[in-house]
Length: 190
Image (cartoon, rainbow, N blue to C red; front, side, top):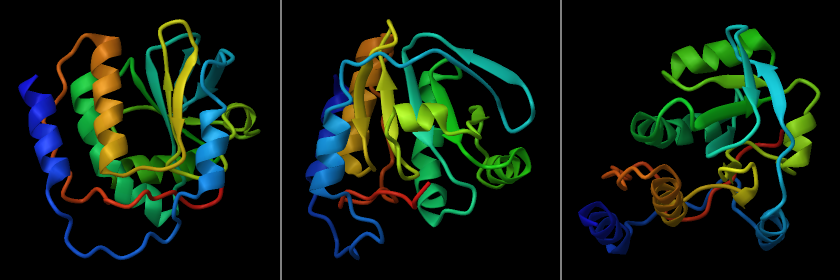
């Protein structure tokens, strides 16, 4: 409970002047992502950037779309590393359409500890209707899509942390969000 209150305090502070996002989240993106809820995500199996195979059948899980040369993915990665540190390996996956070597460079450069899976044919990316990097999908225990966010901001990260806490039984972590934008920010085109 203290973590949630602390998180809300951080979110309630007046934001300093912040530039507009290079890729703002639009109403159309929000509407498209809202219609994804309560569908089931098809099981999948992909290799990660190191060639290790991962099979997904059900959650809880967070799927974050990444793109190796996207500044938006680069800027967002630290907060997702922090969430991973709390909720762990069985919960987080990166999903990209990059070549393995490109994805591995991203993993190394941004110290990504969770697996970044290669969806070269964009099968799961299309199923999630993820058209940009930094799309985030929360998958429930039975494989249902709980929510898809077409980008991120402080409120979204707070909601994701709270929902992950509910699904995992772990407490809401204290998060340092001084690098997380206040304005909803999407990523580059996949």
